[in-house]
Length: 310
Length: 123
Image (cartoon, rainbow over all chains, first blue to last red; front, side, top):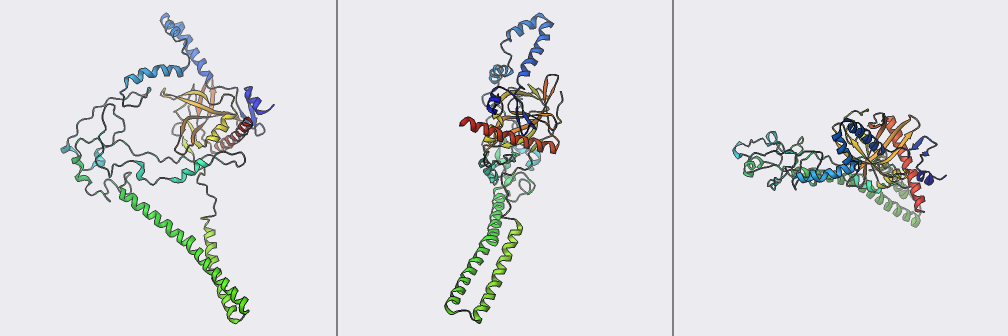
């Protein structure tokens, strides 16, 4: 029987010489209905009133439909601006009006960014762009993950598709600071570039100039490295080849003589010096190592909590 | 319904779309929907991509997803041990690295076989 037929019949599929059995006779969704039936039975036996409730719920045994029924009620309670989350009650927190005179100079210490979308509160446009420009655009994007999309599964060229998650952890809160009076912050941000309070090496927040500088340094390193390892050796090799060709032409034209012999020795010395440089590069494995940018590093581990045993 | 210590229990891996389709191709019910409930009672809908057992350790593993796709079009999968006790399914994290290596190998083989089945279907 072919695998297709086995799958169609709902039977288990054995692969890898029966070392792996793909289970088709087990359903994780079915037990849910049985569990709910078990739960409903003792409730029905307890009193008459729950019977009426259960009878009305007889047609609703699927928890998914229960949630669907509940969702409209929950969403009706939520304000329009908020994202509907039936399972989470959005707390109503009043934000006190900020007193500009009471705002401390050390913003980091006193004013944590809020982490909850406040329903019904209009978000003021951030008037200070520099330290609170928390968009991810300021960060040089990690382009390694762009190769992941090409790493599709193919039968002829099977590749390991486990890839690391390159999502840049969004430690930054996109919610702007709530500031009633932005003038209060003006003096704090007068020396932003290189300021240690807001930016700095250890701070999450970076100024645009810090990012630009880092990027420029990176580009400079890359171009220097390219010059040193590729373009300069290539130029040297091309120069040598030209010289050697000229030497060959001389030999062809005039035959070998003492001068051409000496020039040959010089050319060989030059070639050896070029070769040793390239071998050094090879030993570095900078270009020869088959580093796939989609290589499968450590997967995220969700081991913060121990497994639950029923 | 499957209980777990928290929503998204298990090892997380990002895989390509074709890998995920290959994995689910060997299941009669592809992408079976089920509900995960954590300790606090929070429920979340999930889709089962694959359910398989390893002969080595006689453990059953479930590969599921919440259909989360990242910016590179990779699907985030969760792989956990599926325990069945007194009719209640629960998820357990894979903590042993050797075990995890075996599970990953199994997933690759399942995806490969599944892809062959899909190719046969297309033919």
